[in-house]
Amino acid sequence: MKIIRQIGIIFTVCWLSILVEKALPFSFPASVIGMILLFICLLTGVLKIEHIQEKADFLLENMAFFFVPAGVSIINYFDVLKSAWLQLVAVCVISTVVTFAVTAWSVKLTVRLLSRLRERRTGNE
Image 1: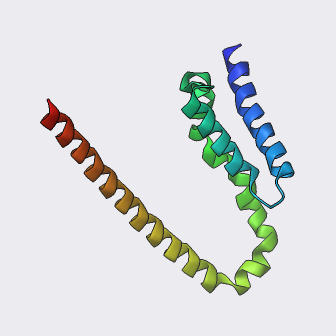
Image 2: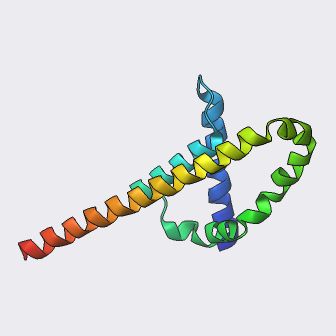
């Protein structure tokens, strides 16, 4: 019964995000809306991480499996990709470098903020 409840919660959040997407006057991905809704529910305490932990872990562990259909369907657009392969490679390389740089900067900032917080806590005691 626990598994059914967890799947039900995840599907309910997905369904609500689709409804919100349809209600918006502009285009916005339902998947992003779903992540925002789930984040808000977890932040406000409406949901606890234990309510979805097991099924969320399962989905994360098997995420690569869900990309197989998208990867296979790329074959249908091979002629389009062949004509723009240089641009595609350039975008992939640039976005990878930017992602690495932003991640490194974020980690560095987080470490700094945490060390300042620790210094303040030890200074107050």
